[in-house]
Amino acid sequence: MNRAVFLDRDGTINVEKNYIWRCEDFEFLTGVPQALARLQRAGFLLIIVTNQSGIARGYYTQADVDRLHDYMKQQLAFFNVTLSGIYICPHHPDGADGNPYAMECSCRKGQPGMLLQAAEDLNVDLSRSYMVGDKLSDLEAGSRAGCSPLLVTSGHHVEPADVSDYCPAIFARLGDAVEYILQ
Image (tube, rainbow, N blue to C red; front, side):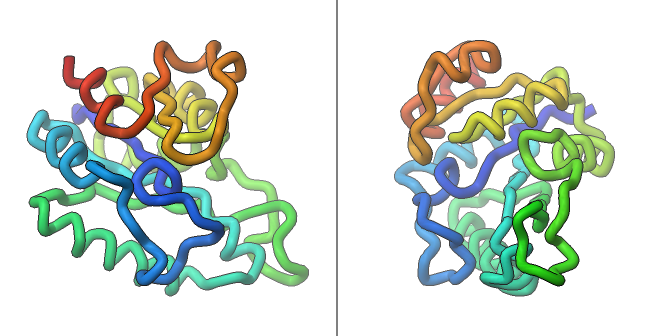
C-alpha cells in the first residue's frame, strides 16, 4: 500500500485569495514546489483535497477549476512533481438557489470523504499518511480518515488551542511540515 501526503490547496499550496479559479490569480507559496518534490522523491503520493464552494455558490464552474488545476500541474512539472490526484468538493449548504451542488455532503472537509475516496482509488494506507492544511476542517478531515494531520499557518489563522486535539505540531509553512514528515 502507498503512503500519501494529502494537501489542502488554498493557503497551503498557493497564496490564499478569495475564490481562486483563474490561472492569473494562482501563485505558489514560497518553496512549495521544492517541498513537494522532496516528498515525491521520498516515495509519497501527493494528493490535493480542496473544498471549492465557489462552484455551489455560482461564482465559477467545475471547468474553471479543472483549467486552474491543469495550469497548476503544468507549473509543478517544471520541478518534476506529479500529483497523484486532485479531489474537489464542489458542495456547500449555502449554495446558490437551484444549484445542484447546494447541499450537505460527506466530501466537504472536515468530513473525510475526499481522503477516503482517494485512498480507495490509489491504494493508500491512511495510517501511514498525512493531511497538511491551514484550517481546522483540514485537520478534522485528516483525523477522521485516520491520517496524521499537520497544520501550517501560511493561510488562515487558527488558534493553537483549537487544534491541539488534532495535530502534534504547528508549522509556519509546508516546507517545515515536510521536514517533520521526512525525519
